[in-house]
Length: 321
Image 1 (cartoon, one colour):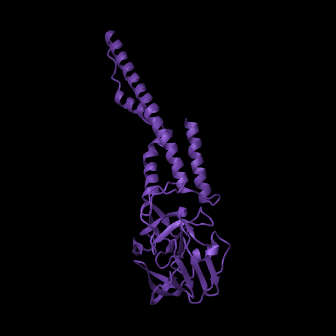
Image 2 (spheres, helix red, strand yellow):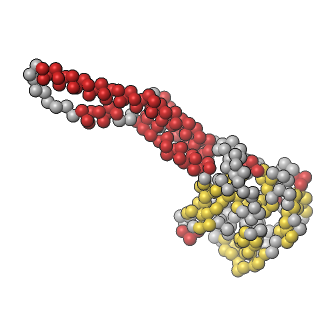
Image 3 (cartoon, one colour):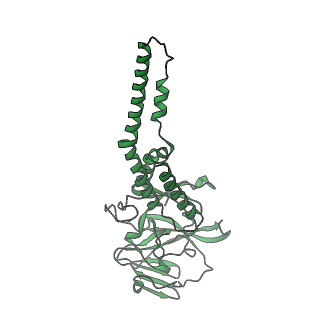
């Protein structure tokens, strides 16, 4: 068992190293699931086999010592007392290969369950959601409000609340589902979304923008126009780069691309059932539904709710608007 366990642990280490070094696309949900199953099997074996056998060995040792003491006493020999307590503790101690498997099972299982059904942490890698989210923000994603999903399969098992326009969504990027993206929900199924000349309309209703003082994007050290915008009940801020053209270049055909019409002024899309239209708050620096299409419901990861840490700026901590 020690040799087999060493191979198993080595496999986990190799997988994580290859992921970290970019040799493969890692899947944290799958990794935690497999780790929970493997350590759970060791934990079960510890409970029903290994620990009872160690207990029997400790009992046999104590009985052998008692018998030896009795035999020596019958011969009139006074033997030195044996510290059976410390010896029993050594016999009952878990070997390293159980300590690193069965011993870790409760922690791994707790992390797996919390991450799968409660909250999952993410790190913001790009500036597409500036000014709402900055590069380096560590955020929490609610995994149950829009319905719980089975880990790895991402199959919905509870309905939850419907997704609302204006909420911030984490999802599997449709052209490359192994990558997670974060954007703001602009259109829900059945909506007609138009982004023409950098003005947003939803179902024919113009979304009002209130201009604020220009915003300095410290990731690029450039000033951009800053606006307050309200979609549904969600008030947030967006950036507009007036030096960028209004037209939207289509990167490639995407599923249900016939629902979108492009022009030199922008794009208009009818959101199909079971899909969402999303955009970044940094409107001219965001690769989103305007370019690659709609987010299927089975790609949804959860709702971004809070920034819990930014090691470069503690003032970033707080609720996501």
